[in-house]
Length: 391
Ligand SMILES: Cc1cc2nc3c(=O)[nH]c(=O)nc-3n(C[C@H](O)[C@H](O)[C@H](O)COP(=O)(O)O)c2cc1C
Ligand SMILES: C=C(O[C@@H]1CC(C(=O)O)=C[C@@H](OP(=O)(O)O)[C@H]1O)C(=O)O
Image 1 (cartoon, rainbow, N blue to C red):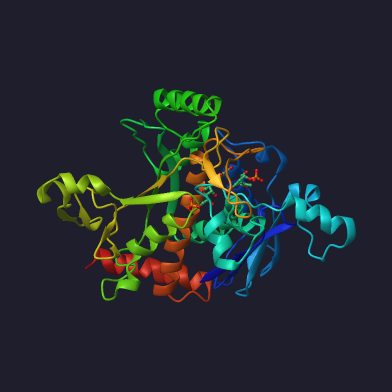
Image 2 (cartoon, rainbow, N blue to C red):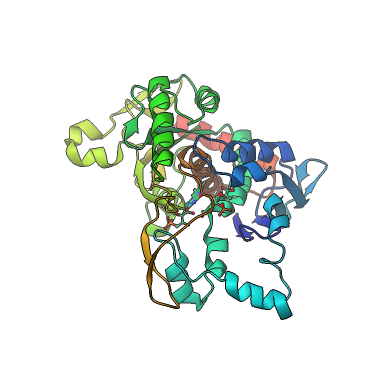
């Protein structure tokens, strides 16, 4: 299974084309819209999110609520497009419009963004040509594709959820939950998607205070998946290691700079006996681990324990308290002025991280088992689970 996304932040629409979903899988717009809505929420989002109401249109590959096995096209329209038709038009401009457009060109690269590197790489002296695609608006359709992956996983008994564990240095402490569904529900109740109510209050204050100071803050999100069969991924070659694919998916999200699996960086400060999970066996479950410090992966493969992945998001780079940069035409130093931006997008990014991990897990399952037909796939995964239990 693979997918491509297309679309600019202020263009008419965003598109994802997914190829390789099995035939006969139920896929409804509402499966996707729920996650699109979740991604739009979260304390710290800016004015753009008040303009957009992200809804998917499924344009191909689904008939009467079920996938056909052919490519699935997902489209989300940009409501903001109506304000940008001239600036983002497809046809060449002439006369006054062309002269106006030259004045509007962006020659001032923003620190922390793709602007300057992208301008140099593609030869764009108007850096709007870079920022339109490097914008995290693209994560809308990554979430849409991820929602399709989540649906596939759910039908195979694999559940996935996310929550926020740190914002601006404030950490959620002693977070406990009974099930993945409970984690999902409780994280939705908080405007920062944090299960620790005390920490959540402080996170909200920290976001407000950063915003008041014209600044931004980042944080840490956690994604947990339960029900993955044992032995998905492989140790035999570097590019088949599933933990590596999951790590790459997290760092591919805009503004994500780090990833941890299980206890992650904490492992560097512990003894081996405090890190490795002892193996146990009982008749009902077969093999299992007594603890899950390694977050569900050993040797690049799933070990049947919950998958635990964390991602680190840097603070949003566009600041009302601007940083210095240099105009590419005049070479003069300036401090950027901005119109609008998120001050913290960590709660929204948790939803993106969940989609990114779901995609990698679903893709790995489809690589391992024959994915032409959903009914056959369900049978094979169940058979494999029974085989592993009896091993
Ligand atoms: C959900 C989400 C929303 C974001 N919103 C903004 C924003 O409003 N302003 C901004 O400057 N960056 C925002 N970003 C981050 C930038 O897109 C990102 O930092 C930039 O494209 C540079 O890429 P890099 O940080 O991965 O190097 C957001 C990221 C995510 C995941
Ligand atoms: C549009 C989204 O996020 C945007 C990501 C983003 C950036 O630079 O990454 C900048 C902002 O957009 P704008 O420049 O239009 O104000 C955010 O709102 C979204 O998440 O849907």
